[in-house]
Length: 219
Image (cartoon, rainbow, N blue to C red; front, side, top):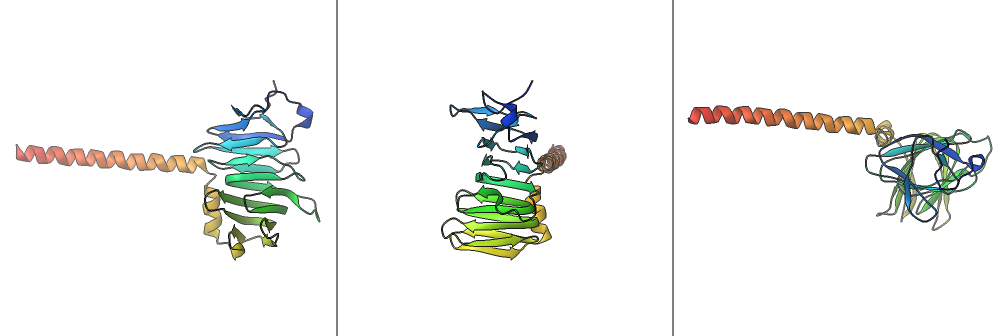
């Protein structure tokens, strides 16, 4: 059977589907309630999707574009011509647009709009500081500040920061890109907690052994 993001669905009008997910991922229903999505759930234009703590989801669109959301994110699904929207959280986009295509896959943030030209980028939207950061690994992202309408291109190997002072473009280090990508690697985060727990258990055992020896000496 076909899994759909809303109660009434038409496969022929679907924008894409859930390619992969981990943790708690939900889509808003017509009555405002939230429904948990599963692998291969069909996604439609303007669907509102949110991820929980330690959760992520990859949405594969009809033309092979992929949007991946990191943990604690809220995203409205668009397509190559209709704006998507990242209210807050992290977004990884891997998009291939036709040559000379203008404003391909526009994504709106709280203070800016980004559109791409054959691009892989990661964006973070901080809902508290009204700051948007875009790391570009491949291609070019055109960033337009909402307040002033000013536009700057952020090319491969650079990052763009949009805040209350405007748009700043800076060279991006390899470490910055790796750190940005790591936000989507939940397996790595899970393994880190296992390592920390293991260290805690070892220290606890050592402490117990020392305590027993000291107690034996005092006896």
